[in-house]
Image (cartoon, rainbow, N blue to C red; front, top):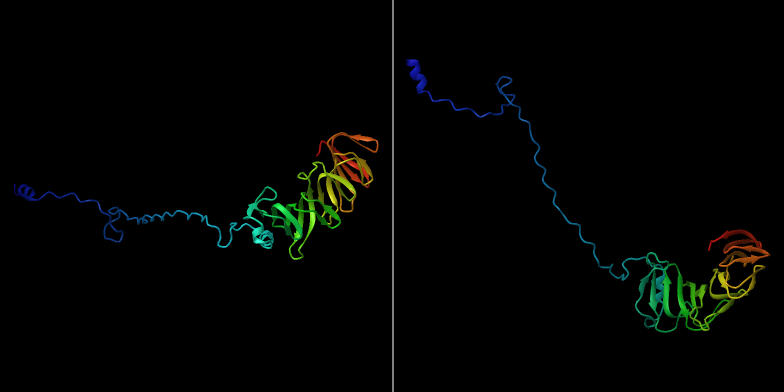
Length: 260
């Protein structure tokens, strides 16, 4: 009876919460749960937005850093009141590499009397319409022709490269370049000799008789290298389909029909 009374007077033991026991304590194995250290949660990196690209052009450069070669230097050599504001242009239809300005009057550009619109490539090539007759070496080019020419700023000189005559009256112009009658346009070698043109009338080129309307190509020595015909072409008694004929030493060395 005494033992029952003592048991009733004792407070019931509260259940102990599970606790982790260090393995260095005096507890026996199996009485502890190892504490596994946890890496702290990494702090999130700050979120930053990329700075917007500046729309401003480099100070002192109105063309946004585009490499324009000698074009700005050439325009700077012209009277300030002789042209409008320059704009970028792409000579070959690709990335801009040149400048174009509207001329207010005929102005000498390394000796070439230019009028209308002047287009200058950074590599030293310019295109304009002649404001008056001009002689490139022994070649006299009439006023109104569009010419393309290489220029040398230091020497102040120019050598012609391209000629077009679409703006000249009468519309059909035959320009004798090296004795060859070219119609409307011609491309020249750097030394001024004919490189390519369409024949304005029947002519003998490099010892070969050719009709009007074919494109002829010559090397700098004046030798015929190619002929492009848009109709059946007769050469030395043989007929060739429209296309390209390759010449060597005045004779047909190859034919590519349909190649223009």
